[in-house]
Image 1 (cartoon, one colour):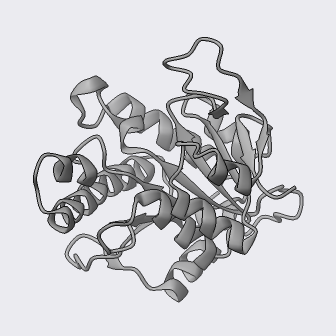
Image 2 (tube, rainbow, N blue to C red):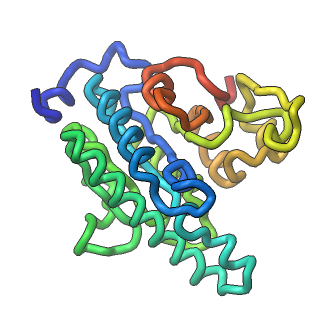
Image 3 (tube, helix red, strand yellow):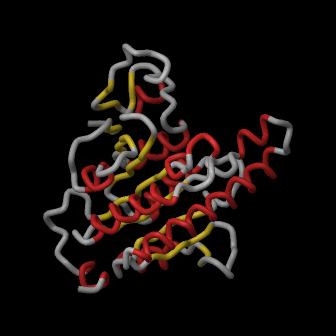
Amino acid sequence: MTDEATASSPTQSLRYPRVLLKLSGEALAAGENGGIEPDTLRTTAEEIAEVRKTGVEIGLVVGGGNIFRGLKGASQGMDRAQSDYMGMLATVINALALQDALERQKVTTRVMTALEIRQVAEPYIRRRAMRHLSQGHVVIFAAGTGNPYFSTDTAASLRAMEIRADALFKATKVGGIYTKDPVKHADAELLEHVTYDRFLTDRLKVMDSTAIALCRENGLPIRVFKMATGNIKRVLLGEGLGTTVSDE
């Protein structure tokens, strides 16, 4: 069965018929040295391909921190805007790598960029992205929002709203949102649910406040979970891993 034929399967029983999945660049990294780990890329693509067969329409936003992080460059004396543009280009590299890995899994994929790089990707046009999704293509949104001073978390929230996603999922290095930094504090407790207001008031650091505020204003639920083998499939199919951020 082709991917396009699979995409036409009924999605009424799915908890989330259309989702936006945010992957950090570090999740694809080859250890602390950065770069792209081929095995991690392959297993991530395999999971996404398996979920796609259920009929879930998937948009992806991938960060670029494994290659270059704009804030880090700015902290070292670079011009902030210039540094952020470099970070956007890093996300394009990751998006192209992810596209290649997905297409090796026979998943039809489109990369759409907020910065025009027509030789390697389509420019982002909302209606075209919606059409790609409805045709069963996985759409990877790269280059953030196309503007400096905005994170890829904010880009993920924005694209999720634009494509009318049912939920925003963020895969991270930790199990979800905790009462304190679990890396530094052994007694940190995992929170199963956090309201938008508590997230902003307590200044929780898993996503930036602009992204959370945008989701709150539009009532988009967020789930934060650990990037580990099998978790993408489990979360996209509705299993309650990690932490939910919503008003409910």
